[in-house]
Image (tube, rainbow, N blue to C red; front, side, top):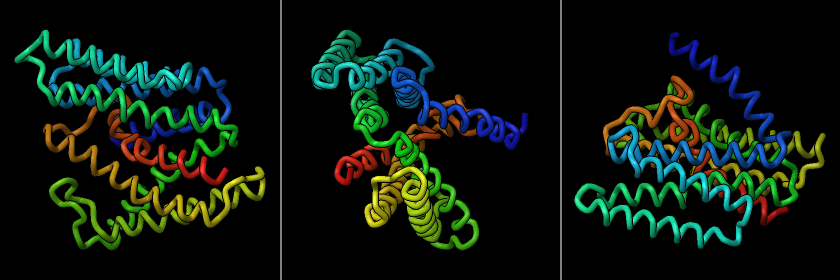
Length: 268
């Protein structure tokens, strides 16, 4: 299968599934999907840092990330207790494997159980807030639109490197194109919601949100690229074939989702 064929296959299958889960699936299904993505993301990160496909720490990274998301859904008041318990288990594991388990590996597991889990759980928190579930599409729109417009603007006008030591192909011109494209897509989304679905986010708030998310999305993309470059890997995984793994596909989304949640809570 060629690269183009695999990308088309992922889009043909992935977009309808994503849309159904986000907009119409029962909450337990949405929560289970988010838990699965967080768990896979935890596994991918630990594999990157540890350089092994599977061991106890890789399994714990995935399990703890998924469990934390599940806690946000079932008992959010105990998330702090859950994270503290996971930290204790991870350090006990490190103590028992003294000399074999490195500090950066333990921190990668904690990052998965705290940051990755918190970011993915934003979808659960938004869905539980009472706002229209259509707004769950925003983290994807304001991440993928930024990436898409940045790519085409970079190809057409790119001359000045944005972060050459992290991602040599990204340019300042592409970054500006991503910001402008995000603004257009955000305002278009606000128009559609206001015109046909009784949207509760005004144009000014959406413009601010789109601009903030365009910057945050690019920081997220570059952050996970920085990790890959440090550990010498091309992709975190192959779940989405040529699109890579969860952390390759959702790196920007992980940074954008909490920002969308914060702004929606403020204006809703």
